[in-house]
Length: 81
Image (tube, rainbow, N blue to C red; front, side, top):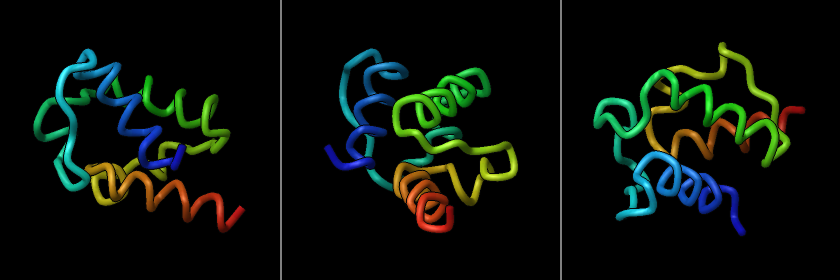
C-alpha cells in the first residue's frame, strides 16, 4: 500500500471511526478531524508503522495540515535520511 493511502486509512479508521474519507487537501486540524492528542497518536503511527521517526520541528501547519503535506514531509524525510 502506498504511504499516503496508509496514512489516509489510519486517519479515517482512528479519527473518523471508519466512516467517510478525507480529501488530500482537507485541513485535518482546522476541520477538527485531528486534535493535539490525535497528533501524538499520528506521530506514533508514522514512527512505529511507517518506520519514519519525526520530531516536533517536522510537525508544523505547513508540513502537516493536509494529507498531501504529510505525505510530502514524510517522503522528504525518508529521502534525506
